[in-house]
Image (cartoon, rainbow, N blue to C red; front, side, top):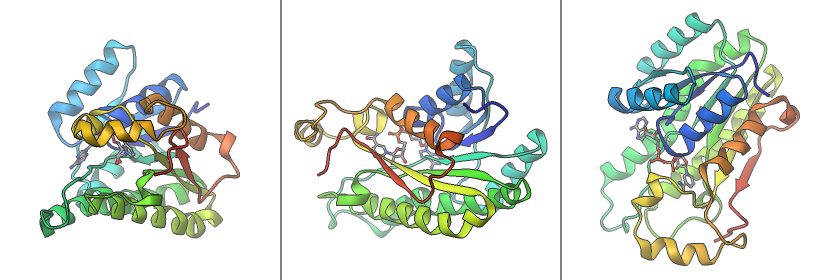
Length: 245
Ligand code: NAD
């Protein structure tokens, strides 16, 4: 479904991002993954190589526009085009407001929101030059309902939806589609670090009766990245088993 396409996936070293890297490779894209540091990028590349997938990896500071711009330019000169970016790197939060410091709040905005701005700003000129592209963002079901603690996380994901909706309108005349996937609770390290008391009651509220697998989310990214979604832009696609709380 993605033959001939070059895709950059941030937060590609584990969880949803790594599974999306796999699925995009299976669908013949040339994939470049980004991670937070050399060790985790090398580990992910080695795992993928063992599985028979050739992927390249970088670890720019996503919160620093100039660092992102430099790496994106390097990728563009290596491959000649950049067709798809998935802004997937993210961190969560669960502290109550009294325990949340301004630094905690700024840190989450820096990665979950500012990094998307930086990646988009750095790649859009190449997509315009190429007369098209696809920008996908990882939102969350909490972008619709909020959550009872860790306010920075849902606030950042509301902002992701805002970026998605606004950029879809700004970039549509250039044949650049912008969409987001809003996963429900999904089996990754991010969820493993949350307390059991928070997870178990949540599962009980999911009509499909299970938490999501990374592949469930990767499948939605594949659809939105492919020409199957050629007339879809500005959409926040919930992939959450109908969990609505
Ligand atoms: P994860 O913790 O398994 O993976 C996070 C990824 O982000 C890793 O690849 C990591 O390298 C990268 N990352 C973390 N900090 C970084 C930094 N400072 N700089 C660059 N990269 C950094 O998490 P996941 O569950 O796979 O989450 C992926 C995305 O899905 C996130 O945006 C998250 O908010 C979203 N999401 C997850 C769930 C869930 O239940 N797991 C639900 C809704 C949304």
